[in-house]
Figure (cartoon, rainbow over the protein chains, first blue to last red):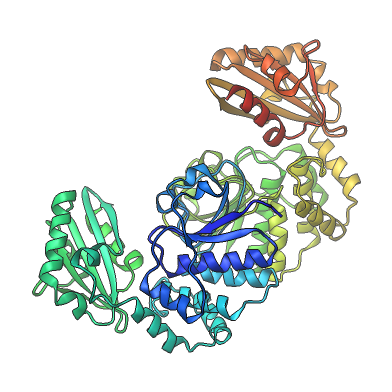
Length: 310
Length: 310
């Protein structure tokens, strides 16, 4: 048992899986007698706050420079250094629990690294409680099930595996919640876009991709009422146009994802806008194109665009 | 279950852990209903052959271009691409089971990656049989215990953990062997250096390191009778001198490790030879320096030299 405290954290721009998995793994480690603390690298979103409030758990402490307080850290829900703490190169990563590809990650020493191709980090943590014979509390079950609901959009995302669904069904009664009822409530809490500015809407969850010679940015917002965003279409397009010009982009796309109907409405700006029509076999009408059944940027939006432009 | 065969292999210049772990993981996967085959990237050494013969297991098939036969592969006992198949970039790595640092490794997609900071890959595989509820056969127990004995030099290496020792003690009765008796026999089988040429002795297991501005090569041979090597000291030094000159090295060191007494005798050539005297607080006498208790290059030889020269 190490005496020095080890910090556990997920990625920047934390989502529900990142925050909950840091808290949950810290709980498991603490019960195993280790000296750890969950921290976070960014603001807690409304969806995550709903999960924390529901189960009466306090958010992890916010940190910027992890090396100020620790020489050893554990990463959850990410491994790529540009998604991690700014000073990640100044500490030793002793463990990683993750469900993403491995890239931009290197260590000097052997470590405990556990990645599984499932939809959510919490699904792996749920197994680890069993492997260590540690009982899952109501609170931790609640955080894990929240993370799974969030990452899988209530099991509708193509990233969701049978293991994720089975874990959620197992954890729901321990957490004392009805999956559909609580799941929708939590997702809705994070899907209120009425008070966001156009600039916030397009950058809340946006990633830049290099597709052939084209620099493309794809943003995504989850909504219950697409009108929250589409009623301000002109202002949103104007905000995207500014980004296209200042960053030299070929395409800025915003996917407005309806979490109830599992569709996305695409808005787009840039010379390569027609690539969306080709890639998804759709037409923009009044600047909007409906992508039926599309909810996952990683699995359903990036690959067809990458194939066309890359 | 995938229909296409997945190849499982360890690193180039295969040692006992790499060969045995590929065979053992293929056994476990096959029993779980998966279509896999263990292969190898190099010649089987005498120590490994002793293990295979003892337990009546055939060596994996030798391969050079893995992409000729498979699009998906599983790596055991390594992850760095320069230690793997030449065409590793042309296949998808779907799993890694390893106990080394992570470096020079990147994937496009999520995968199953399991690394633990233990002394031997087989120690992790032994756990995986339990996790899947699959019984370990006598043959597979024999291969796993051989791998642990090899990587830990019969539990004397500082890389050996409590988990490795516990796994070996658990597997020995299943394999039907006495740990000390069989262990020594197997290690001795790989420790006969009498028939190796000086060039073979210095390159059998050698690695190049960048230490500050100095390029250093450190070779290691395990012996029962150090005379196999030291009786030909002048010829060995001449072979090292040739390497120093042709590769511009500051140091070529050969550690002749006595597996019975857990000491190493160092031979060395190059401008930076005296670094060994400083790093280990020893003197060369007739060109030989005794490093008491030193058996692990990774843990006991590289770090003090790196600290001094780096």
